[in-house]
Length: 452
Ligand SMILES: [Zn+2]
Image (cartoon, rainbow, N blue to C red; front, side, top):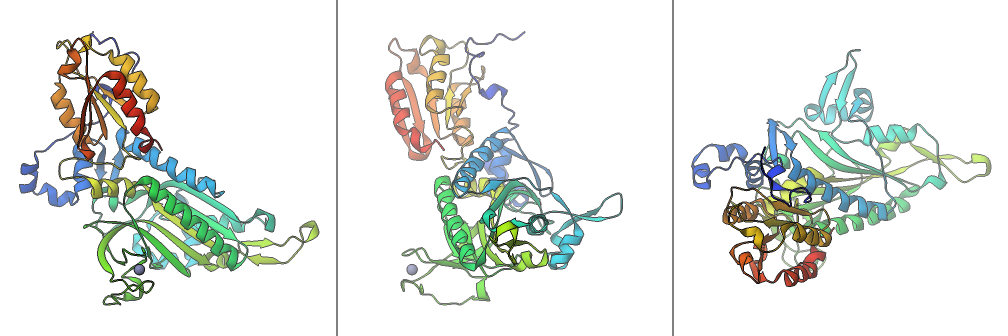
């Protein structure tokens, strides 16, 4: 039986027990090998190397515990903001019959990107890449009253798209996690009001995530509808080209109107437009009646006794690429060797690092007690690197590269009669040596930025 240090029973999250299969390849070696070309993006390489995400087959990925913690944080931000505008969360099946896709015309227009299969009754089925058909036929199956409007339903879950060439890990994978919201309104004016409210909520969501983003006028692609906007993270590997104005924040996707040369002045303020590549992380569409007409999604007016003429609903649909954001945020913020998460999404905000056993480290600050106090400031967001055979320096090297934003080190100075703890915030080049109580006060003073 292994001897365990005395704090083990009480600390909740420990590196020694975290499932994080690392495969660290020296960067120089990697650069010269073919592997980097296969992996194609910095985020994909780093997330795989550090045991955060693993490929299971081409275009499919397992999110391991650290990635899943980030995912939960991201979903919380999204749920918070959508609940503020009365969106209700549901779960639709991943599978839908192909006939509703035929009815909308998208069985053909989306074509080979649809993942299809036949069930045992030989009926053709679709693994949904999006759910306009599914939700509109559902809503169309029951009579809505004007009192039910506006109706805003969303879900977060796996979607499927057969990519010819899946690339950049989670940024362009065959299975991906998306948040999709569908809205139903009475008349164009109300639909536009909803569009505005959701766009505002999206701005709040992307601001809370904290990665710089750009909202641009978008291309309607194969979703259809009358108006759309896209949210992008500017990045070199982005597959969209954006024109945008740094003065008034107006922008558009160059795909729009196939306007390659376009104007080089902002139509709003006349400033010179900038051009950059972007990774699309969100998209909003005003759909009009494109799907509600096809699937008979209607409401009846407030005539007494449920009377009144049935009218067709006005719809909107709104997506956020949840798994894509995790990878794209890492892509934008990281260096070639160090993962950097936005402070809102790091798997743990704080990592406490101890010396290896036998170095008398535990004669200083009581680790268990410190963990508990820091955990009170960052609830359920603290991990202790308790591995017995690694020096504190090696632990620091790994924690820094895994991207934990705040490192609390119990190093040599912790063995002083008057012990000091070290606090490092690598992304801001902050390194402090403080008495334990001053350290806790300092952590408290900066905690707001990390709490979501
Ligand atoms: Zn402008």
